[in-house]
Image (cartoon, rainbow, N blue to C red):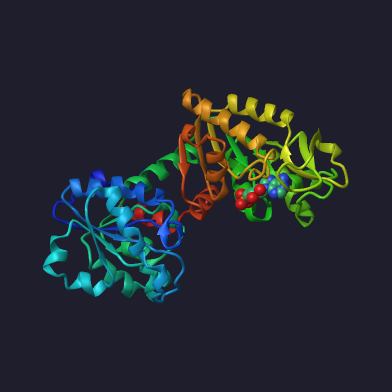
Amino acid sequence: MAWKTLDEMDLKDKRVLVRVDINVPLENGVVSDSTRIDRIAPTVLDILAKGGKPILIAHFGRPKGKVVLDMTLRVCLKPLEAALGRSVIFVETLEAIEHPTDELQAADVILLENIRFHQGEEKNDPEFAERLAALGDVFCNDAFSAAHRAHASTEGVARILPSCAGRLMEAELTALEAALGKPARPVVAVVGGAKVSTKLELLGNLVEKVDHLIIGGGMANTFLAAQGLNVGRSLCEHEMAETARAILVKAAAAGCAIHLPTDIVVAAEFKAGAASEICPARACPDDKMILDAGPDSVKIITQTLENAKTLIWNGPLGAFEIEPFDTATNAAARVAAQLSQDGRLISVAGGGDTVAALNKAGAAEGFTYISTAGGAFLEWMEGKLLPGVAVLERAA
Ligand code: AMP
């Protein structure tokens, strides 16, 4: 790996600026899921163990350079203290850190108010980055999920201070490198979800890197239609037919086998308990919509996974929120989880709905690595260099 980890940094008595992602969901003003907060604990505790003083920098929502009171990070203070098992001091302004009181100087851990309250953050303003950098001696980026943005606290500051990756960033990058960098072959990608249009670059990059590409969900309908099959009233981007065919041609040239559903689950309505039937992919009735892949497709997916060494997964294979259209997603996810548990498969999954779908299948635990990053994970799958990672590589 071309970036430094906390192990390579001397942190004794150093002020360590730590960029974290604790952009957690709220319900009635209270944190409803503290996963992101819990996941940064190892980094903060390791910095403390090495004698460093962590100053946590994070964003919350999109205040766009202004103070927006209901986007305060203060809501994260209690869950953060619980995750760390120690007290944390919340600081509203940069001035407060620039002119610390005795209490602040004695503090173990400092959490700074929403960094996006400052105009310079999202602009990656060099002066603002300098001001941030002056608050610390070392920079540690533990926010992989914000690494696709070149902001002052993710990119600018890393140009100035000695910089390294935190534990969560390290785990994300190691897992992604194992899946798409120099993976054990054969490599299988599962890409599902609603639309081809949102995942074009991702598909284009994957066909050149993986041996098998399993396409599911609404986007599979677009590919079926592009091959001349009737998809009835299914979600389908007919205007993307040409693009879909171009991806198939590119895949063939790159030696990537594309797997589309061979059988489908169709229904007249998209609602729980709707009467559904299974039919061959070429026989979708005019008045029905395709909402899941059928059992034969699942068999092929299972065989493909059994012969694979590496799996990278984004997007559900069907309309997984509603039963029984979660069947193919659940079955494939459970096979992947079991193969991973048996040590036969390295499996990495991430991006928006994917985590929810794998959790719903009870399969998330079995995967080798689940990324909590949304946009950054997708951009990585698209083959893009993430600015927050690139700058760590340059700093190493
Ligand atoms: P994405 O955010 O692109 O990963 O898409 C996820 C969404 O795609 C989920 O809400 C699924 O319900 C939806 N989806 C998957 N397959 C289908 C399908 N065959 N028809 C309609 N929606 C689908």
